[in-house]
Length: 273
Ligand code: SAM
Image (cartoon, rainbow, N blue to C red; front, side, top):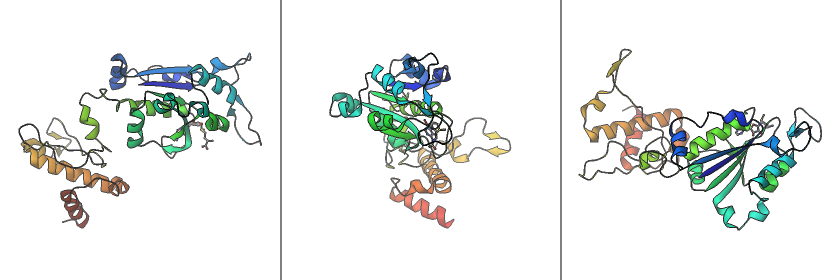
């Protein structure tokens, strides 16, 4: 999968993709990232990328011409010309914007199935709306707050999406066993028929994790995790997932995939029994 990032601050990305999974995915050729300086597509002495807003008001707006040239330089035609071509199926041009659809794990999973994602980083008051209308398949927000530029958002999108590209995570299934994982709550067994100590998150938040030492800061790691009884561990972890989701993100429970056992556990958590 290939990401292109169009930005007025290409230096922002120096080093940001050179750590951990993101670095490894690139080293293994599973993912590539191209960072493109918007100013390279200007033609005046000052390399001007912004101008005052029509209608007045605060701030500046990123001009359409350099962005259109940058997109053309990446082989991205206006979306009307791209429609119904193979490129349209495999590629998305995305405008990072606080006004966009919110990035979620299911959406990240969808994007991870593409071959190429072009990310446009806004600055100042944003990008001339005609770029959105003519070129962008989607406006994407990383949350309900306003950043000073799209660069941090682009980095978040690249990180979130690339780890879902097949082969990037060491264990293919591990994306299913973390917060927002989609695999349903069915209990799976290993080759010997023993229930695994975890199962698909079913859309819930992850359970808490512990490692050595068993006692730290006066707190003991939960006894059940030290015993090696996989059935008990599975049940404890599931209960913790339900507790955490109920406490922090009850909205997720409405669309979670819950087994009968989950529903019983949730009832007893709610009633405190
Ligand atoms: N005037 C815009 C508004 O009120 O929605 C805010 C512009 S913001 C200061 C500058 C740029 O930061 C935006 O064009 C966008 O690219 C980026 N940005 C800000 N918040 C964002 C968010 N929550 N998600 C993604 N990008 C964001």
